[in-house]
Length: 251
Ligand SMILES: NC(=O)c1ccc[n+]([C@@H]2O[C@H](COP(=O)([O-])OP(=O)(O)OC[C@H]3O[C@@H](n4cnc5c(N)ncnc54)[C@H](O)[C@@H]3O)[C@@H](O)[C@H]2O)c1
Image (cartoon, rainbow, N blue to C red):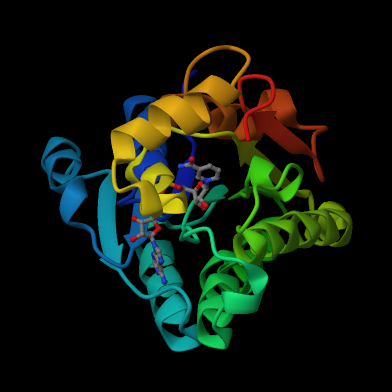
């Protein structure tokens, strides 16, 4: 797919899925603004695509930092055809009566409220353009919760509801808004959901991989392909959808 006409903002771009998505769009010829708290993992890509990639370090739960980061992105990209939000944090499985208020609030801030802040700024540009595609990465956990992931599941449920709310609101501007629900995926985040075992590889193999009917963990590249499709002209009539990329039924 030729992506030369795509100008893309990826958030959480330093993470497992974010890197794969950034790389995939660059390989197709797109221009990308990659936003994250830290951007150190993107150095190699920056060297490879100096003219088509800008990295922007920002805490995307802070309103002012989001505004500044999106302004820098627009300066670099000119316009924003595509936004893919992958930023997120995991919750270590915790019984509800032991969850700290601060832990709950942090999960909501990173996984849900940041989407409000980022989408709000990007939509200002997309409305002027009269087009755009937004993809928010939620989680299959919002549909099939695991015990103890109460705050995480709620935050991702919020991300899905927000996606649907924006899809209906922004359709008249030809802005499409969709979500992807990854199943258990082979990134460093997966080990953080059950760290009490202490052995991340064991948790990945025995807890998560076994739960996937297709027999393997989702790869970050699988999520990149789904993000690519949702942002493509081939998906021009797809909005308000939630695409499960979960190998059948991971938990
Ligand atoms: N890995 C999985 O099994 C899995 C499953 C379902 C859904 N997801 C979701 O997919 C998305 C990507 O996950 P991943 O596995 O690549 O995780 P990851 O931890 O590798 O990447 C997440 C990125 O978000 C960034 N981030 C966190 N807080 C931020 C903030 N305040 N401001 C800016 N950036 C911030 C982190 O720095 C990190 O680079 C997340 O939203 C996650 O919840 C992951």
